[in-house]
Length: 333
Image 1 (cartoon, rainbow, N blue to C red):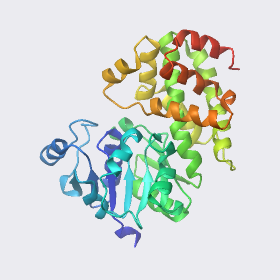
Image 2: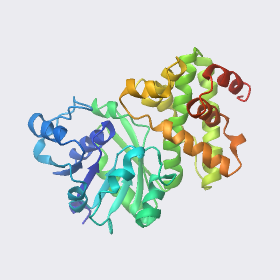
Image 3: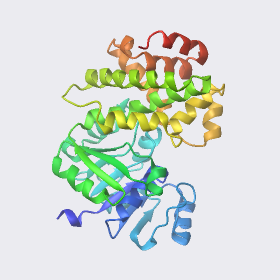
Image 4: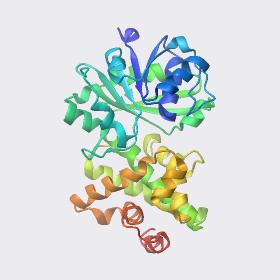
């Protein structure tokens, strides 16, 4: 039965493209929804995404492409969403097809602005998807290295171990190693938070701080992440595992990290608007920063997250990055 499950990927960006590549290693056909009809026509004609990871070549007969989200929902049993969190609900509002009985995995690293929830919770609360039908795909794994077929590791989290193993089996290959987890809330929050810390790392680099400070910043960030996640959803977890610490490190240090790039531009004096325009990509951590800050404020635990607070002050209160980081250095150990 599992071998007959149909997979659909939602999102035409770099991560969506990478997931389609991984699935086509194991499946005869993969559904793929993207908004851009011109991108679809290009893929059908040329065999690659013109806008993201254009070096990845696809066998077009393996792809069921559509710019109609309902068509791919109806044609799929397992739905993997890789649409930036800021735009997810806008896409879901187009739905007329039912999500009942669908298995939904989030490959989105952020908060849904309309609800203030991580993606799994958003699907559960707004679309009544039971938690046993919800899962999370997380790293440490950059889409660009998947495109290059460099050895990468994925964590697949679900409350239902059978579903996690099933999705893991369809994603693994010679260059993709997979492991499963039952911490769907913690891994998804970690995937969101690491983008904020990557922005902090980028700001520090843009301001001229060196590797010594970066190591202190990252070691404080993982402890801050643990405090945050334990407050939101406490369970036994190893915060040093790849899905938490590993994902934080690759996002904080990698040249492929758009959040680090965004932070670096802010540290060098760009405004938020100008940095976003020049990048022409979504830095999920920008939206996550506000949501994380407001959640800790609501829980009266803001004092426990000095790095998040510092990034919030810079991005949303237009505070001088140099002065904010001077104060932050006094709070790190």
